[in-house]
Amino acid sequence: MRLEVLHVRDCPNLAPLLDRLAQVTDLPVATRLIESDADAARYGMAGSPTLLVDGVDPFAVEGEGTCGVSCHLYRDGDGRIVPAPSIEQLRSVVAGSAAQVEVLSAWRRRAIPMDSAQRTAHQRVLRSFAATGQPPDDLPAGVGRALHDLDAIRLTPSGEIAVAYPFSAVPTRHRVRIGDLVDVYAMCAIDALGIAPMLDRDTLIESIDVTTGSPIRVLTRNGRRTWEPAGAVVFVGAEAGGGPSADCCCDYLNFFTDRQSAQAWVDAHPAVPGEVLDQQQAEALADRLFGRLLADNPPHPVKGDGD
Image (cartoon, rainbow, N blue to C red; front, side, top):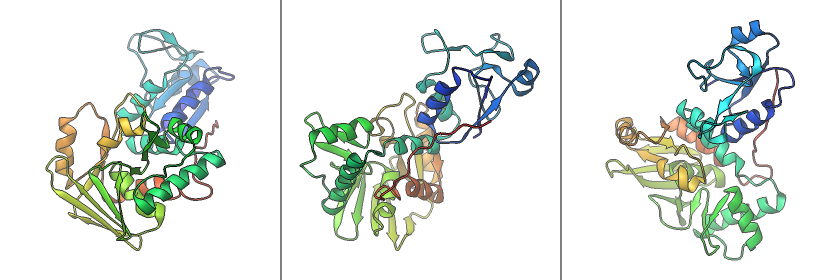
């Protein structure tokens, strides 16, 4: 998917649009400076800034506006005129364009603590899950709340750690054995696949196909994964409204025995935008999200702009 923003020089609404796009996707966003009505017509700019998704303005309204170098007028969910689309509107556009891999990647990367003290605490929580299957019980309340607000972990109403992606403190449909020693539970299929590269350990994932109930196993030995059955796939999707990963996407990231079973689930849940990943794609996504989570310098979003 190609994202491009057309804009005039010194457009005050360009920065807000780019910032909001960075919050919903880490796909590269190109920008193009438009300096004449002729260029606006040539490139399809219906006012500045105009977002193009694969060359099409997803916010174009039939009968409203023409190409030109004036300001672009958008409408929010209540029909009011606003200078730029909301995060929810942009997320819906990106999700509707079958970019769930990038949406999930941006979502999880934004949850990586950049503050050194918070990062140290977060990694301590992850190592506790890996060693015992449970979180530590002495995380300072202020640090825990900061990590919760970041969506790096999720706290119960009483302040206990319920989730530290990829781990769950309570049983889920995705059980992972680490090194034949510790059993843990993962929040979703991608999280389960991410435990081996995060820890650099052998793992055995045992899950089920939510359509048929059939078992699915993924064995990781020396960095290589073996899937049973051989045709198993993963569905990646999320509710369009946004929110914490545990609430809006984890329940929809599941293993399926084959693409036909996954498609049956997709057809039965038309309100959940997403895509079916083959094994190589699912493994690459898991490696990307979790492979360096315990590193000294974990990955983080990089914002950029250029004409």
